[in-house]
Amino acid sequence: ENDILNKLPLRNKKVLITAGPTYEAIDPVRFIGNHSSGKMGFELAKAAANLGAEVTLISGPTQQKVNHSLIHLVPVISAQEMYDAAHQYFKDVDIAILSAAVADYKPLKAATQKIKKNDTTLTLELTKTKDILASLGQIKTNQFLVGFALETNNELENAKGKLKKKNLNLIVLNSLNDKGAGFKKETNKVTLIDNKENITAYALKSKTEVATDIFNQIIKQIHA
Ligand code: CTP
Ligand code: CA
Image (cartoon, rainbow, N blue to C red; front, side, top):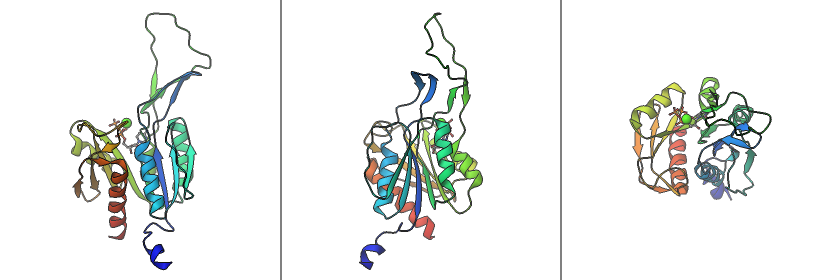
């Protein structure tokens, strides 16, 4: 029995993961969202649970399903709800990985009634959502904080900038340049950058395998 337990490197660790898109209400029937499937976040949650961790998975609207005794799913809809849930759990966790594709802007005011069609053009005023990852970076104590960076150009530079600015331990650069990678796909091509600027580039692989690569790197760094 001890042998089995020793093979669970995240036993007794608590892990927080954000996943999926967020939906920002325009009116009671419409929203601003994006094409994030939630797959990467759910794979990260499963990988962590399979390594023995107790996982809180905060997810925006998604088709993904999970059924694991060590995964507690917290469904949310908007960026503000995801922010509130993340802050509720963050203090107690050892590792937080923010993989959600949070909407950067939301309507300044959601209409209480369905907006009727009138003029040829309609202008929506948008306001920035709170940056959940950056806010956790500001309050973190001993948590190992991991972010994602979705980039199309100046990839390494932009990812390093986010790592520093948001006070992260590790950032996962998601290359959208690769045809097989990204939103709605089964595969991802990532580069991991740590806070000492060590860079590790991985091949295009399944999101399940990418999740394992990310945890191998996290475990290595926590023990370093
Ligand atoms: N993120 C977040 N809250 C937001 C926006 C982003 O927690 N309101 C997190 C994402 O989950 C991801 C990281 O920040 O882990 C980077 O997201 P990304 O969209 O690549 O970067 P942004 O900082 O939003 O900048 P931009 O979209 O302008 O590149
Ligand atoms: Ca963004």
